[in-house]
Structures are given as C-alpha cells and as structure tokens.
Image 1 (cartoon, rainbow, N blue to C red):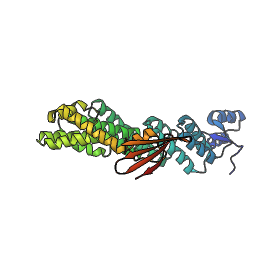
Image 2 (cartoon, rainbow, N blue to C red):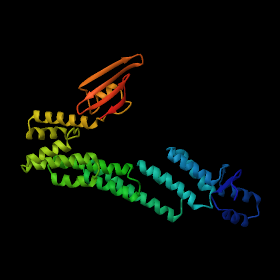
Image 3 (cartoon, rainbow, N blue to C red):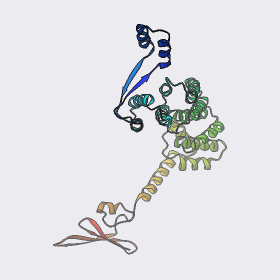
Length: 329
C-alpha cells in the first residue's frame, strides 16, 4: 500500500448507517440531511509513511516532546490500519514515558477512543495502579511511611516500569523515612530489618551502621561501637549527625576523634599519591610518594638548568627546566 501524497479520510460513523437512510427514502434532501447529520469526516494530510511516523514518535519520546509524540500517535492511529504492532509500539513508548515520570492520568489518556478489549486490559492495570496510588498518597500524608512505601512499591510492580521511575523513587524515600521514624522511636531491630530492603542504597547503609553502633553501645560492646563509628560513619553528614556525634562523645573524648580523623585523612592523602613519573612538574614531584628529596644537585649550562634530586635508598630523579626527564632506582 502506498502512503505518500494521500489524504486519509476517517469516518466516525459507519457508512452502513448512511446506506440505511438512503434505502428508506428517495428524497434527495433527506439523503443530504442524513449524510450531513450522521457522517462526520476528518481529513488527515500527511506525506509520511506509518513507519516514518513511528520513528518520529520514538525520537520525540526520547526528547521528552510528549505533546508532539501524542499528536503523531493520533495520526498513526487513524492512517495505519494494517499494523497493530506499530500503534502498539508507539502507545507503549508514550505510556511508559508518562508512567516513569509519575503522570498516570496522561498515560490513561492514551487509551481515549480505544474499544479493543485486549488493549483496554492494559488500561485496566493502570486504573488499578491509580487506585493504589491514592491510598499510598494518603498514607504518606498521615506519615505512615512504611505502609506508604509498600503501596508505592505495589504501584511500581503493577505498572511493570523501570526502577528509575517516580513511583520506585517514592518507595525508596518512604522506606528511608520509615527507617528514620523507627530509629527515633528506638525500635532498632525493626529499623535494621527495614534497611535490608534497600541493599546498595548509601543512606540506608549509613543508617544501618548507626543502628549497629547504637546497639553495640547498648549491649556494652563499646569497642565494637567505636570500630563501626570509625570505619563506617566517618564523615557522616545525614539526618542523625547529632546522634552520631553524641554517641561518639559518650564513647571517647573529642580529642580522640579529632586525632583519629587527622590520622585517617593523612593515610588517605598518602594513598592518593603516586610514584614519580616522566613528564611530571616539580610541584607534582614534590607531592608524589617520594616527596621532598634529601638534596638537590643543580647544573646550569647554555642549554638550560638540570637537577638531580637525591632520595634515600639510592633513588634519583632528573629534572630539566622544571620537568622530570629521568628516574633511577
């Protein structure tokens, strides 16, 4: 079938109805009035093939031009009667984009005018998800975060959309709020169990480590509590910063933690340094693992200045005009 250059005529009412009217009367005026009142036509002018329109829709969805994507989808619906697959693909892209962003109503609007029961079964899942979403929103408003998180997760699962979605994000944020609420209520066991649902989430890991340190302290295992705080909660800046600091000071004096931090960051700085390499500048050489030399032997000629940097262990670095040109070990 050729599509280019054609005007597509779409009829909202069946021509069978018009034929029935014609059959019951020979009066031409009656026929004209019937045609005018019962047949509503719309001309769609588009030189593109359905496949070209499908490609454009995919591009617009990727660029987040949803109004343009929907407009082209409606054209595709009207002119592409030969391929259910093309319209299904386009509808799927648009629907998923809307659902990932959390716009359920927009996703439902894609099904306007569709009567196919199989396609409408897709819509029914979204309608059910919307009902659960209403419940989730109410639970979140009531600060019942754990229950809200479960509902948001149910919405996400029912819609079968990627993790990088609004609803999965709401599941994560409400779970975190639930953990924090349980910690404030000193329900550490429940809070700890809840953190396991967010394996790999950095904030959940920090909260779990605070819980473990707090529980160790409560059980009298101060050495374990100090170890957790030093290894896992150094530099913590989250919502429980005051509680973490208070726990630290209940275990060791402030000077201990200060000296521990200084030592830690000195070690980290040393680990981040590299050995001297050809092409380094003098400043980079000074900041390398070898650091400052024991002595520097300098030679100046008509061709420039060369230096021999002498290090312990019979190690030498040769510098010409401020650049490392040789290394001897």
